[in-house]
Length: 125
Image (cartoon, rainbow, N blue to C red; front, side):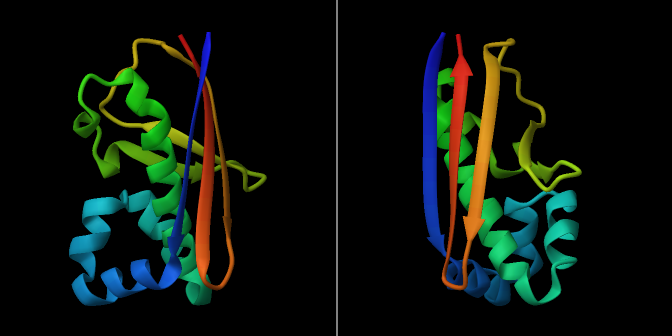
């Protein structure tokens, strides 16, 4: 077994600007309907949550690229960030198979007023 990791940090205002300038086009390109609903329900902190999910997807992509022939075969909406009943984030992949090569994948997300960050560790064959 091998270990891969990925990390990302982003300024929250960059995501806020992208959403405010392009609205639904940006949201629909990057986020699943479930992610949009989750973030929109956060009201005053929705941009922090959008940015955190953006960073989480980037971190996931950096970890799983070792399993792909072409790093562009995975798109934004094929990786969905969800939370369990305790608030811990996890990933669901849509329309992509890793042939049971991923044994475990763990995500940590954090955000403050200016930045959102995420870290992913993956155990794989």
